[in-house]
Image: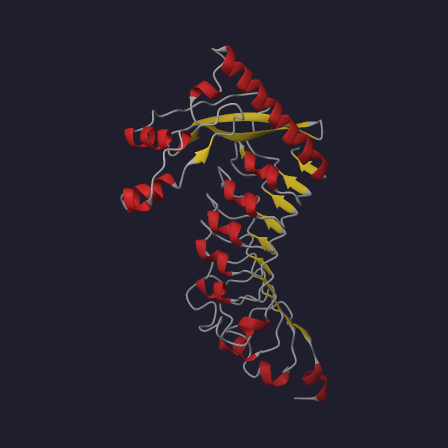
Length: 334
């Protein structure tokens, strides 16, 4: 290798059709390489040569033919590259699933898989603990796994142009999230927990069937005898010890959720009322947020007590929204 190539840290291969994987000897010619751009070269596989680049921090392989068996070299996560790589862009390829080999790249901070053929997000995405930027727009994703919320550093999440119908409330645990792009999906409501995203600055929702007038959607399945017994134990603070009950019932009792109605004080397990409430953001937009209540009495307008509870709940929602409005800088609906 010449001195110039030996010291080179960035290499861009000209867009052309490559007959095979990365050229052999690449690591010998460019041993100090930190950024490699092979976008638009027609690559169908990257090859084992990639594993011989121990200093590589950025790999751009957009708009190729990657996605079939053997597209990525075996042992990717175990190679030195698995520790050094920080940015990986595989957008515009043919991946039908997130390659399992990528989940071993523990140092990865930015991952782009937009414009592929993905139908889902694997729960093991939570293994990428250093991830700050995740782009999965332009695929066929229908749901979001709750495990996505276990990425402590995630700041930018792009899920636009998919087929997502709901957002798991666990996403509220993404306390570092600053931008959430959900436009052009199939969303009809958002979980109320989204108000807990204290650092969120941009929320993109345009192109979703979010309704524009106040609507309540009540669905309620009567509680089972087990749930009624569990509610009684919890609300009346009936004392019990793990030795008093079978292990599965102790675990069941630990899953009780508190009714958000401040005047109720009840709990629920599996049977609850789903209620869509609209709250104001920035005094201009009304976002539908999903609430879960323990029974229809917490939301029914038929009794004065429940009217008071409903009014209080609406007031609480508006208070939450006003706080969120001060935090959120952009809510993109149009």
